[in-house]
Length: 450
Image (cartoon, rainbow, N blue to C red):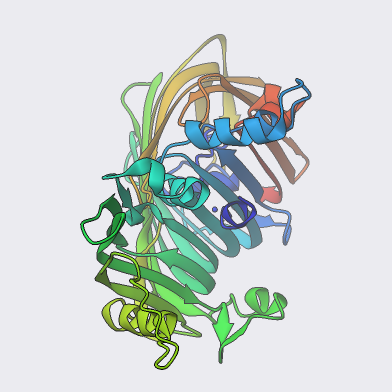
């Protein structure tokens, strides 16, 4: 279980930040978002920070609550409850540099560099059951080895984007990204089964059918030695790792003065892992009916050596340094927002015009992220409130894989040219994190010049 947790390190749904208060970081979630300032400069390492951790179908209280139940009993209950779709994930993202400037009345350019640690690990229920309980209670059951599924990546992302106002209703945007990954561990296309049946020549016959396991890594092992200095991952993330390219696209469209639609596709791209690659493969089939011992003191036989040699021949294991390619976890966002409020004010903008907007808004957002096993979905309802021209708040209610009652809140304010925002998700879980399935935060500090 500790090994499983250690693999669970991975950007997720930032439903509070998405489309909120024209913060510069919203351009990373939708490059087609509208902006109304001349230029911005992010405070290095503080302009954007986010963290997201979640456990599907599992809480720490399941194991560590003081309820008088034996710990071993809790472990067995947990093992029986978890399914191959349950997983752990974690995402950490830090903006090293974020800035932008207006070219003209219609065009805004933004650029920067951020580092991201992103991973997901699924629960290999069949493998854990086989290791924990053995095969005797599960005759004729095929244990599925394709459930060995995980992916973790640490990368630096250099990006430049453009937001272009086509007309009064439509704004389009795009962002080009160059990925530099210094650490990756993942599995690709694992398959095969382990089955035990009653034997004919012995009590049991064990079948390993079409085993094909592929454990890939880049940046973790060099010359058969594991990475000793983790700082290399950070220092080499600026174009010093395995490279890839990606694209973000987005739009904002005003259906009317009150009704607005936004949408984006983020991280449509790949990384080609070619540096410090170390892969392990296991392929083949094997049938084992046990060992029939013949006790001949004059001619002793090393049965275990012969068995091991036969197994190695039919199910060979090997290491290689072959480069491989992996797709990034692409994300799709779409939101519909309706603005209202008894007070309607005007804002003096960069182009010496007035922009009318309402003080309140409600809406619905849909988020999808592509994962190794299947896409994950989230749906969010939200309410936004503008208290003053410089003070905004947002409340969200999200339903996803982890919770049906996830409440988030965000505040954005600007004092002079200093813009500050802070957001938390799973708000009511922070008073008892051990009983929470997920928790996340975002914060940022920028200089904005109107």
